[in-house]
Each structure stands twice: as C-alpha cells, then as structure tokens.
Image 1 (cartoon, rainbow, N blue to C red):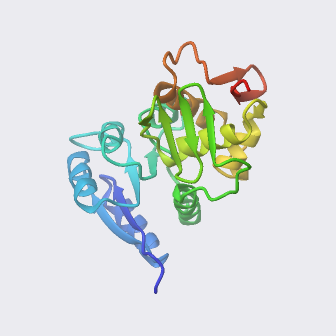
Image 2 (image 1 turned 45 degrees about the horizontal axis):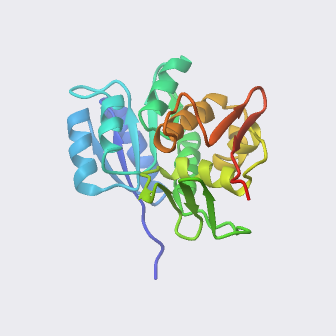
Image 3 (image 1 turned 180 degrees about the vertical axis):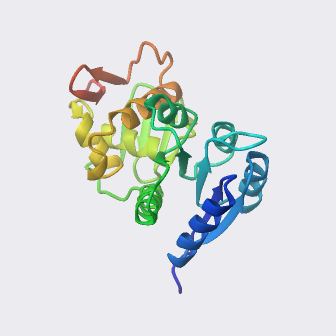
Length: 234
C-alpha cells in the first residue's frame, strides 16, 4: 500500500507566490489545493478537509486570522500563517486564533517544506510509551491510549499541538517542565527559543481545561522556569 498523500491548502492573494508554493509542495509529493481570498479558502477547507493549511494573513474578503478562527470550528488540522510583518504581536494574534506556526515573508522553499513536514509530524498521534494509561486530577483526565482529554467526563476539543503540550505535562505531573524542554519536545529542538509559541498555546489550553483560566488550578506557571501540571493527591 502506498503512503498517504497529504493534502495541503495554500491561500494567498499573490498569484506568483501561490504558484511558487504550489509547485514546491507538489514536487515534494503533496497534493495541493489553492485559494486567492479568504472566503474561497474557507470554502475549500470545508470541501477538501486538508491535512494542513498555509494561510496568508492579508487576504481579500476574509483575512487569514478570520479564516483560521472559522476553520478551528470544524478542524484541528495544523495551520501555518504567512505574514509580511515581523512584529511579534502579529505572530501572537495568529497563534491566539488557532494557528500552530508561522512563516515571515520572504521565506525559502526549504524553510517552507521544513515547517510543513514538522507540523504534519506533530499532528500525528503521539505514540510515546507512558508509565500509566490514564492521568487523572480532579475532573481533568488524559487518556494516553486514546489520545483524548476530558473534563467532567466531556471530551475537550484540543488541537494536536494542545494535546501534545497537555500530554507531556501529564506525563511529568508534579514536576516543573522548563519552557525550552516543552518547546523542544512539542515543536522540535529548532523551536527552543520561540517562547511566544508556548505562551500563546498555554493560554489557549487553559481556556479549554481550566474552570477559570485567570486562576488556573491544573496548569501552573513557575515564573522564569516553565510550567507544571498539578499531580492528584494520593
């Protein structure tokens, strides 16, 4: 049986860049669908159910932020944002609405392919062995075998990135995990200095698992060091 051919949606209003990105991804054996505005990108995402999306921020009809926000209502596929701006607030906003990574224009084809492959790799189910099949603390449960998190018995709709963060913290419950270690384990060693990636994703994760994200009970910050997931008292 031949390996799965991943489908990637690329949305950008620059026709030259769109052709270039499509060509490079197809040469790397990906199936590519394209859109030149936000409204079309959303329709293609709904119809094609792509394995990964590459979204430009500045697009007609709907910008990349809004497309990302709406896609997150029905898909957990990795999303990489393209931006011509290098300001951290633009990156943070993209991550905050559900993106997994970003690329600042101009970028090289090898850099794009590396980010795409890394995002797809992270999206695969986490298969590391665990000393216990299930982690439970109060009403929060992480089932490592099912790759599922629940709160009060209800499934939590986590992106693959959010699940990997929660899973790694759960496997190390009661211990402080450094920012660099989390970044390296969840995104890869080349991301160890991308603190804002982790900060924004932790905030997103808290909004989903904490009764009050502003007063977290489960995921605690250890200032200047990292994060810890509270361990249930025996």
